[in-house]
Image 1 (spheres, rainbow, N blue to C red):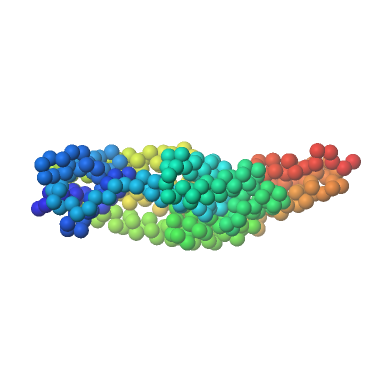
Image 2: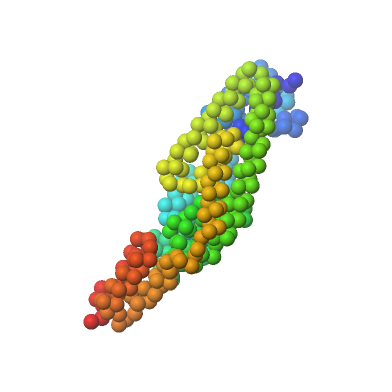
Amino acid sequence: MKTYHLLPILPFLLAMPAPADTFELKDGSKIEGSIVKQEGTDYIIAVQITKSIKDERRIPKADVVRQFAEQKDETAYAELAKFLPTPDLLSEEAYEAQSKKAADFLKAHPNSPKKKDVQKIYDTLESELGVVKTGGVKFGGKMVSAAERTPKAYGLDASIVASNMKKFGERNELVAALREWSKLEKEYQGSTAYRENTTYAASLMKAQLANVTASLSGFEARTKARESGLSRMSPADRVRSEQAIAEEKAEYAARLEREKAEGIKWLSLDPYSKQGLDEAKRYLETEMRRVSTLDVSNLPKTEENYEAAYETITRGNATKQEIDAAISKVRSSSMPEAYMELLTKAAPATPAP
């Protein structure tokens, strides 16, 4: 057996987070790592197996056909290129974080061939951030200014959440889609978008229940296959693989704690966590029964009340009594505080007598 092949680690191990050089070998295989030292006719290469597990490989120099140095600006640019086009309803904090990464690239790689492309990315992010900072939002791939958004803000934002839910659903990212559904239900239950999407939400739950049920059915075979793979490894390889499994288990547990602390109902799933799959199945069954009996006709008309209140408040001859009555009505229809603030700001400082 040749000495340069990587360990036969299981497919569930994490990929290398930050490749260094790439070594192309005579047999067509490639290894990513960095040269630690040279011993006679061999290279000693450090290889990152998981985030915290490193190993060294001995490779005969004669077997190396080509060596490619990592292009750090190319690696960084690959991440930045994904920022555009920005998604709908991107938060101010997310814009700022992405803009900072683009600015950091320009400082770190002033002579990069990708400088002009990154500058365009940075300029676009800053331009859209300016709109968001002043109360605007992105929807349907277009920036909507605060002046355009405010008259129909509640319904517009509800439509954005529903649109995001459908995008995730179309990509079969069902947990992400159901999280958008939770947001729609929690914050926009009085919207047209909510009333029109209860059936779609139920279909997402049905699809996710099928996935979870299938995963539970294959749980025993899956765990046995993993144990079988471990048992065929050398002692050293098994120790490394078991350590990687333990790390992934700890990371999953930490992620669940964060999600629960944030009040997320649709939790991340791990095919090797039977408890998580069982809990998800029970929750899906409960939610499907609840959603199937929803009576949307009794929901508050929050969207209609918001738009009527805005029209009243911004009417040139609206009196203080009319403005107060409009705001009181919309507040009583389960209006989130953020939209109450928009209405309050839209009200004239000096109403008509």
